Image (tube, rainbow, N blue to C red; front, side):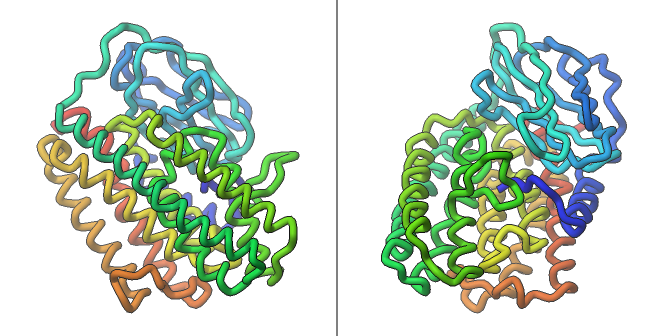
Length: 381
């Protein structure tokens, strides 16, 4: 779940993350047809061109504002083509995306709130981006994986909801974290629809004005902080299943491309850096390491599917990604006695030094992972 407001701890994590994910790259000269310079401030979202050729495009983003921002490319119905979250003030990011001919919106969200400051743009031309057939196979395999995760989530979520409706506090607590694993592995796909994530995975500090708080984290608060299940909670449990069923039914219709898979892997690492490492995601249950592991697994799945093409285009990048994924997997294993289980140490028992070690491992992986989308598009020089 994307954070909407950042604590001091989170802002520090974001600054550390963006420092190693392309923020020091030189800005684009703006002379390439396929490069769009995006300049974000607290009150503006300026783009260097309103029309560009369909196919692979690069957003060269600079945040000149005082707030952490995020930048989206959106379909006309607000579904997400691609996004980059947690862009710190004074930093730069590059995002590679694949677009078909048609109308789109580029939106900057200073403070990561609201509908954003928007610019209407158009991709022209009738030819799609040329794609290695292996990438088509990777997309098909990832779509199957995302559907499998959604299908596996529903029975676990129903077990959780049934415990809530039965008023069984301990059974609901036990079922809570397992019910979230499939969602956390494929969260960028769920977020791409725009309307499901705010219903099922929003935290209290992520609510928009007038938005009712529903979903997992509202129930998490009842179970661990309030220590009681109310009639309203039982209604929320039913609503969670309704919303997750909607997600399950729509996963197969998601727009997935090789670049969206690669960017989604990076988004999952951002999720870890700004929610799990800080302990903000599961602030009542302290099951953050379960989410952390699921996010890493989801990112690694995308990477493994894209790896054959990425290796041909940029072998050094693949070597580094293999190394960093292995390192973070080994580190996470320290916090569970059984590598086949998801019984992790409660995150409130993880000290500051260990949290820093986890944060450093995330940053070390995020930097090369931010280059994966470009590596499945073009060969390295």
